[in-house]
Image 1 (tube, rainbow, N blue to C red):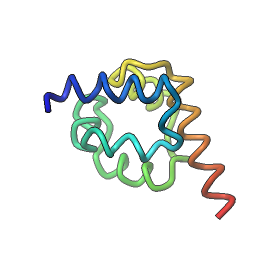
Image 2: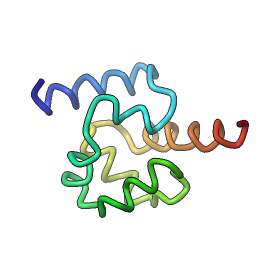
Image 3: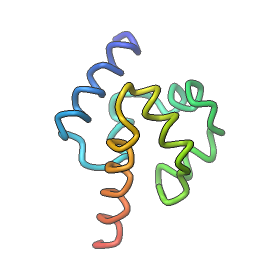
Image 4: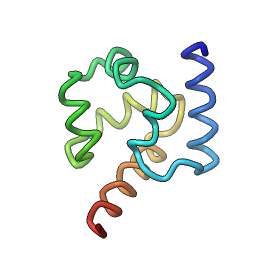
Length: 88
């Protein structure tokens, strides 16, 4: 499937709140794709996917720009992943 179509599908899933944690994004797009589009270091992205506390506001805005959603929606996914990790 075309990467732009995947981004549109992912955008719709995020807007409909069907995704609950940040790492679920990568079931639809590759980490490499996000790394290339945001300019984020690949290994830093991998580390932050496992422990999203390392994401900066700038990262959040860049990811939101690539996925065509609001930074708030990305922040909500990151926060949800952090909170769920604390519960475990």
